Image (cartoon, rainbow, N blue to C red; front, top):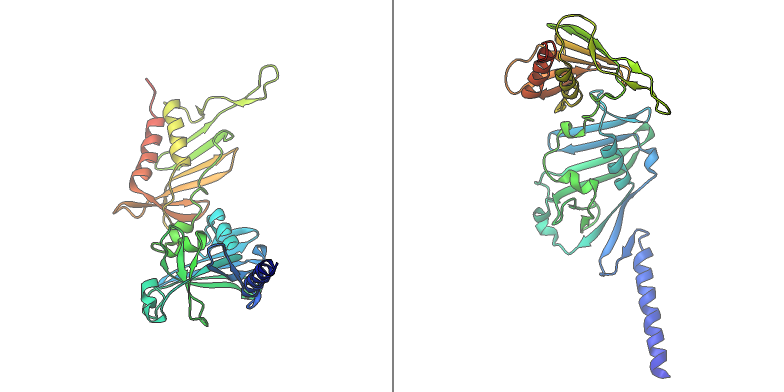
Amino acid sequence: MKQQYLLIVSGLAGVLLVANLATCEGEAEVNQLGQTAVTLSSFEADKARTIRIDKGEAKVEVTKQKDTWTLGTGHKADQRKAKELVDDLAKLSGEKRPAKMDQLDRYGLDEKSEKTIIKVLGEGDAVLAEVTLGKKGPDWGTAFTKRADKDEVLLLNEGPAGRVAGGELKLSAWIDSTVIRFKQDKTTSLKVSGVQTGEFSRPTVPGEGDAGPSLGDWKSLSGGPFNGEKFNSLMNRLDGLYLKAPLATAEGEAKLTFKASGGDDRTIELLSQPEEGDDRWVRVDGLGYVVSKSSFENVEKALTESLTAGE
């Protein structure tokens, strides 16, 4: 009986100890491995208005404008990437790791090491969350961090915040590279102007029986030779142009302008400059982007072949 009593008392003491660890600071929990998880930030994700990331001289700022995350250059940001980072920071936690404060360089958290600072701001630039990251952790998507007022090293669990610490911070990684896409299955016309010209359309064909209407084959309205197969290739190459990076300014004369209508209306301009190196410039609905020389030239080639009679 006495032994049972001692076991019960010991069990109660253990429960109270864990409860005390979990509540003494209002932020810590002890997981099954005995590691202390610390809450680093907590806020309502829908209150976020701005994301700021600094890593050395590299900076990225993304602002929410009419429910759309937008880069400071005006380009549409990668919506999923922005949302996932905000959601992660809205409930960010890290686990304490045994570390000596005179060996913070091992974690990239000493004064000399380059760090990554992520801030999430709300209305009026109120700081909702701020975290300073050192080196990436042992697993992909993890990173070491340290609170300014604490002598401790924390390891973030795998997630979007931890992934920011790994590799170089590039603005190009934050653009929505799909903004050039248009719904080919609904596009009914394409007008081309510039060094080559043309106007193309396809009719709506009534469906048979219970089938709805569909779109017919592309035809040239400009007269002259036309290769429908090559034209389909042109549409695929336009729709699939990979946008490598945003351009703050993309002034210059358009070498070729493509205006697609009927699906997602889209204006794509291939610019005359620059004409050196492996990059070329385009404008998509007025905003400039960098594309590869090869993809730029493939669009030009596909247009030329479209205006050549098929075999």
